[in-house]
Image (cartoon, rainbow, N blue to C red; front, side, top):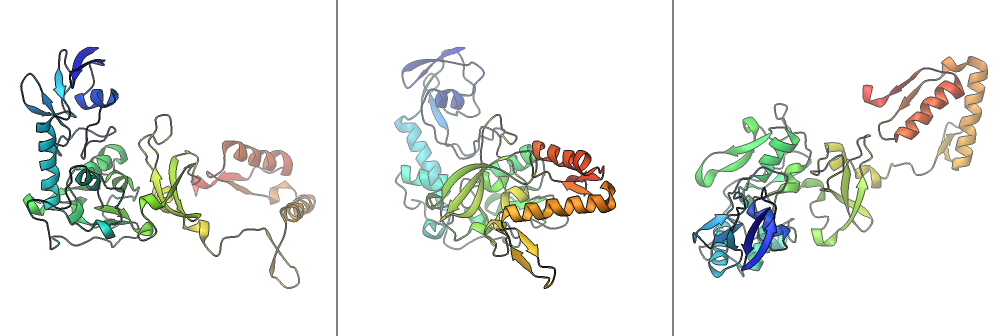
Length: 357
C-alpha cells in the first residue's frame, strides 16, 4: 500500500496501480481518449495529465505509477488549461459534422468539447476532407478524417483479437489507420475477421457499423444484455434495439464472462438480420401429401406427426435408418438429450456435431 495525496486529501491505495487507476478508484474523474483498462498503455492523447505538486510537472497519469508520498492535483487551473488545449488541437483537425455523425451522443471527443466549451477550434477547423471514406465491405465504415489516432483500434486488434489486421501508416498529417499490407478490409489477403472490436474501441465516429447507419443514435436505443446464440461459448452481447427491432450488437465488458473484453465473432456481431426477415418461419409447417403444399400447424400437431413418423420408420427399417446432427447453438443439456434420443430411443449411433461440417 502507498499513502498519497489527491487534491489535498490523503488516500491509501495499492502500490502497484497507475496514478490513473488509483485516482479513479478513489472516485475522482480524469478524462482519457487513448486509454482503455484492457489495453496496453499508450500515453499519447495527454488528456489524463495531472500536476505533480513536488516537481511542478504535468505527468500522464495512465503511464505513471503511484509512489509513497505522491501528491497530485487532478483538476487545477493549469491542468484544465492544458487539457482544453489538447481538445482544441484535436478539433482543429476534425470534421465538425456532429449533427449528421453516427457517433453523435456516443463520442468522447464531443463530450470533451462540451466539457471545455469548445463549439469549434480556436485554431481554425478542417473544411475539406483529407481522406476518402472506406465503405467497400458490408460491415464497417472507416472515415479517417474523424480519426484522432488514439490507436485503441490497433491495440485491441493486436492484443485481444490477435488478427494484426490494422496499423498506422504514413507520417504527419497523412497518418491514418489502414489495413495491414494496405489491403482493404475484407480482401482475401487481409487478416480482418470483422469481429467489430475496433468499432467498439473507437472513441469518435471514425469507425461505425454499416448495417446500423441511419437506424438511430445511441440515445435512441434500448440496451439488453443477452447471450450470443451462435455457438456454445456463451459470449455476452449488448443487444441494441429501437422499436423492437435489433439495430446493433455492442460489447459487454465484465470479468467472469467467456468474452471479458467484449470479444465477438462476425456472426455474433452482425448475424442478426434473420430476426426480422420476412421469410423467417414462425410456426411449424406440415406438407400436404396430395397438394405438396406446406400448411401451418400447431406445435402439438407437428410433434405428434414427427413422433408417429419416427415410430413408423423404426418399425419398418430399424434404428440404422436414422441420423442426427447436434448443434453448437444448443445447450449441453439439449445436445445430451439428442444423443440419448438417437442411441436409447431410436437405436442409432449415427450422430454428429455441426462444428465438424
